[in-house]
Image (cartoon, rainbow, N blue to C red; front, top):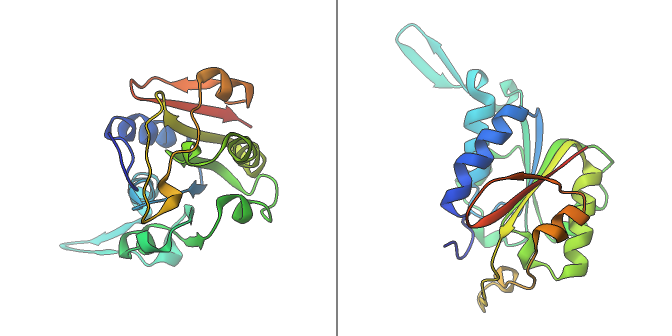
Length: 191
């Protein structure tokens, strides 16, 4: 089970596979933590534009040749490492709701929040789900544990779990497409 800024392992393959099929040209990852989704999506979505191979030599293409824009929001600056700085085009450090508010409607093809929703109280969580849908032009994807897991982290209160979300809660908020997973609800709202 995941504690701290890591996603549950059982979610990685189904989420990344789903995103690969969607093939978005722009992604907003809310609550990037250690940046595992940014890194995986950069390598999976960028593919041909990531490396240049010529004969027996190969090198990483410069960022200005990348075709996919992947931006991230993180509330805790202490998690930022060179992994996130490389994977994401742009990092916003701050409260997710405050960072989302000034964004125009349909700014990103995909907006996702993996293991983030449970860190908000219900009212702010509902606002987050609505803002994600507003900012997404193709889809918004959210994951949250099926069972409430008590988590209290004095060193970083943003890690505290403040709410529990049921399938009905997510469906009522418009997240009606479900990716099967034993541990988490992985729910999608199509634009």
